[in-house]
Length: 553
Image 1 (tube, rainbow, N blue to C red):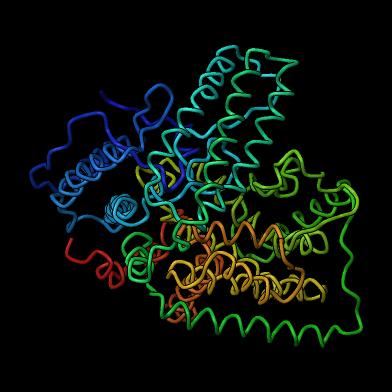
Image 2 (cartoon, helix red, strand yellow):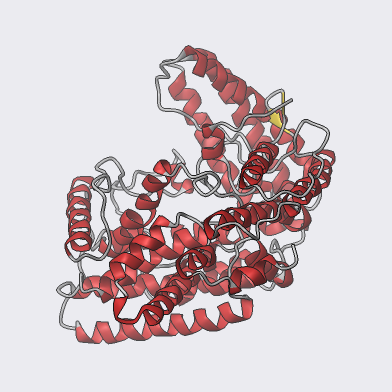
């Protein structure tokens, strides 16, 4: 049976979606030097990743996982048989992307094993909680126009009880921290399914009972976790040695944990020191008050976005295409837990602002730099990238350091480039954000090294963020959960920025007076959403980092 990977499947696929091919395995091919063979192998491998689905339930059983891990060796043998030594750098970059993804899948089987360790992996709704099982349901807006979509959604909802029953069998190595996170996640799902059942009654009565069944199954799963979590091993990290292996071999990242600890701590100290200098300089100026209504928020964001794009374009800092513009429908960012229908609305009194809203509701320019020419630019550009392999969304967080590093780089960039010269309190906000990004690094490393529990990591982030973050802050809750469940995410912001700045400095010194920062930015972006070490190879022709990461493969 040949399985076709649809665009929709790719969009909902998380780095942890793994599964097996229905076939009988793949035989290694004889040596070849064809880039077309690499593209064909990549297509086969991507078809191998999604799970077989039986009666609407993806198979994460021990048998299925063991079979996939065995079959992965055949794909890696096919890749090793391809000789890329005479190819162009652009083609060899594709080879490294395929190798990194195959290593990523291997790492899931050898180390992470979310189907066996992480109860939160079995999220049956696509609410944005991070890594999750294949086929998580995206509950649509009502009413649903297509009757076929109604029928398909009913089938998905009816499969939820069986999926969560299988999860209880699969979770043979569950961890306490991960179970506690899953308990909170499941309560949101319970409330979401309950609200959906009420709302759908008016439009599609046939969905009411399946939604109620899904809600009951989520409640049973939550109750089971509550019964077992106290007796589970606490730590959920991958271990220090495995973490270093993942950084080098999957993320293609040139720094190890020791270097990250030293660099990030120095950067944290720099951000706090500069914040205090800025605060003293502006001591006679009151901090900006946050906006209090959605209307005021929308008007403020529109102005901030337009100012930002004009600054970048008029200053010749980078090419701003006509399709990158303010999106009036974007709205405030909503965390997954805030999708709980039992919670009050964002602008309901009294206003309860988490850390990021404390910043953005005052002056949003630093965060808009992160999200508009940062993530939004990446997303829009991705949709137009038709290059084979390079233009696809990456699995296993392989492009994560590049994506978050670029976005965070832009936060301090607009400060250094002068956009905030006449906005003293916005400069303070920028440094507060920077200190918070740096304060994330230690908690991730300590959790992944199995030295800290989630609660200890959460407290560290709260204690070391200079302002606006207290116990229970939604940003701290979400961040620490994500950094435990997805290695590399928390360090990716600051260390990605460090890696990008290192490349900028290298290019500037290599080119001397011919260096142009607009050209640098445009070339960096044109390389695509791929690891920065690969972008460096493309831009400089230097293979030293990649040679070490490839090893003897």
